[in-house]
Length: 380
Image (cartoon, rainbow, N blue to C red; front, side, top):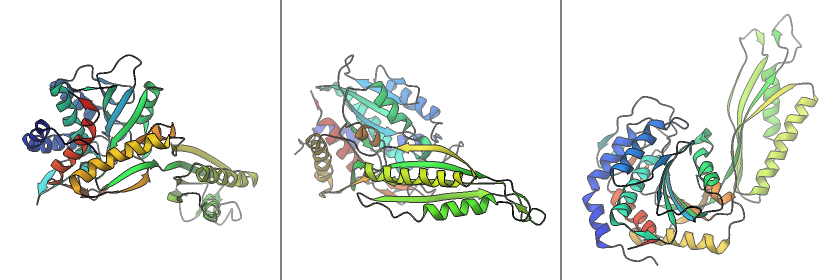
């Protein structure tokens, strides 16, 4: 069971209710598609420094890293929340509040979580708290979609062999992610000779070949070692109604929370591609994204971290929430055997839609949950 939160922190939460809301709104207004988080990263770095942080830097992946109490080559604990949003917009959003809710694309995924992380870092800095290892407060990049967890990968590379645990603040506080759903994402293009629909009738049609390949891919029976899914998300190609298509392409993915099942799907996909190539069909394959499954994490160490997170959530909600596997920044540490978990600091809805919203009244509860967890690693 976690210790009771100090009164200084409870006062800090109350004193900063509006500060938190304003910070979320300020962050929401800064466009941050994956691979284009530079402006939001600059804002976060300046904000950290304005609140007493020293040594803050932006790495080559556009992570904003605030190393607190870190020693050269010493172990670190990572608390992170991602700066990117799933939306491609490069024009500023205009968040608005109505009926106790804040509406804005990306407000819950992951801007509110990022703002809480920043305020927690400021509190730790103000109080001069100490931990038994270094702590990294990170506003990380490229969690969404084809960001392919670039920011999390960079942290794992830069601090290889030094990371004790990772906690990612993402989503809502009514669940806990304790496992990694791995995935492979591909662009597949088929090219044929094509031609005139009448004059060259009989030539191979790239659309027909692609349709046949899709049909073949959908014949696979998903393995049952874990939960495995697959999907063709988009298809395109052809020129006109009277043209035999010379090219057609699709975006295809498969996912699983089981490494062996992910490997099974990979093998089936590769064999399918080779089968069509063996028929003389030109097939080009581009790997767009690759996310690993959970690796060999020490069970006791993982349970200890899960217990801390579950206790923090239960302490302020009265609920022992469900644990499940998902695709988050924790995929990278979990794949490398590092204990990791992910949960959010608010409630809301409409994630990944332009009608996304958060419940403003949930923010103080979420900040106490996150604070209870973070402060459990510190002492005066």
